[in-house]
Length: 243
Image (cartoon, one colour):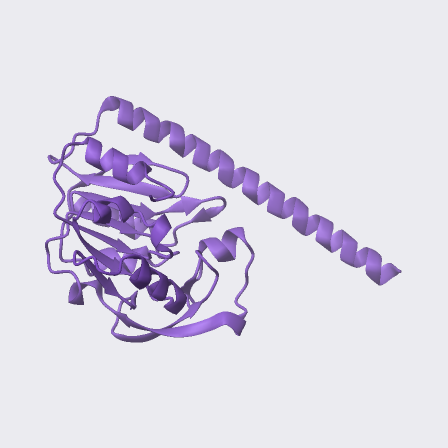
């Protein structure tokens, strides 16, 4: 059973039929946003570049003919890309901002860097995906930019702690141009639905407003903690120098 079933439960509660789900940035199979869709026998396209995670996914879903796994990153070009391994926060090395950089202060130490094949999403997407989850630690925009399908539901990592997706403006503009509206948000993701396919109620909108307030408060608190910790570190450093 998936550790986080909220996305699955909310999507299936709509009564909408899903024939093809996809997840970009799976990490580990037990934490996959489409885990339970796969167990339901629904066709699933999975994309994950990190080799150890790829092997875990292959072993976990072995024998399930409804799963297609692509061991690559999705970018704005075809070829190879360097990634910095940060566990579940592994990200493309050239990004200016990612959750690991902003929230964890992981820096750009390349001791655990690795190179993975990369391609545009259009080379994988056959146009039939009707539910998509994207969690690529800052490069989500490049998935949407080259997507052929127009899923009923799209979940995108957009925020968390002091982090805001560096391509949030592009993501929002894409959603508006392509007929999507925000359905709900959680601590890291914004979930959009295609207008006319799933209704967004006034209560949904109120909850989004409330979550936006919590996200802003959480970001402020995170930045304050980082500022205090940084100040304490600087004072400690000066003390050692004086000694």
